[in-house]
Length: 250
Image 1 (cartoon, helix red, strand yellow):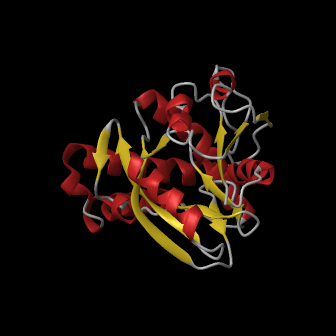
Image 2 (cartoon, rainbow, N blue to C red):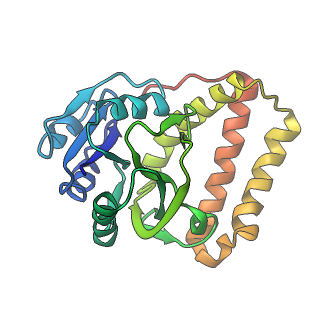
């Protein structure tokens, strides 16, 4: 059986080579770029000729566009800021060689924040579904997209390395895009947010990550992660309440 690897990108020249180098052994690599203004597409073409430019709408739409271009029996999705470890690469090869096309796989993800590993704060439960038979799964939700499939799920313990938020400038740009999309998604769902929600939900988010999910065991980086997650929750709900869903261009 054959494996297709798919990735969506936009202005990822700092990440794309490391990402694609970790999956260059795959039978096929599909890159769908959402309109990069840097060298992302040029660098991606070092690894594959199947690089497509499609204007970005939302994350699920982009990923489903990439999925529709794959031809392998199995599809593995990876983000540009992720790397497949050698152990995970070996396990993926065994899965596509030996397993029947009747399961989707969640993959254990090791998250890094500002270059430091996160072991707690929710990271210990991070198993996103990334591997599935082609034609048996789709993506839903415009932001924090999720895989929808009728197949059962198994978990792989070999790790996917996630180099999230390398610096504060990256986080600032991510915050602008993600909170705008989330505010719009809340509107689509017909949600309501009071002033109490705008204030109370970020406080609850902080204590959930830092105390309930043992984020304090990650030390200083755990405190920073809980704090910025709380601010993200505040900004998302404030933008929704204010009707501010427009992404500001730099």
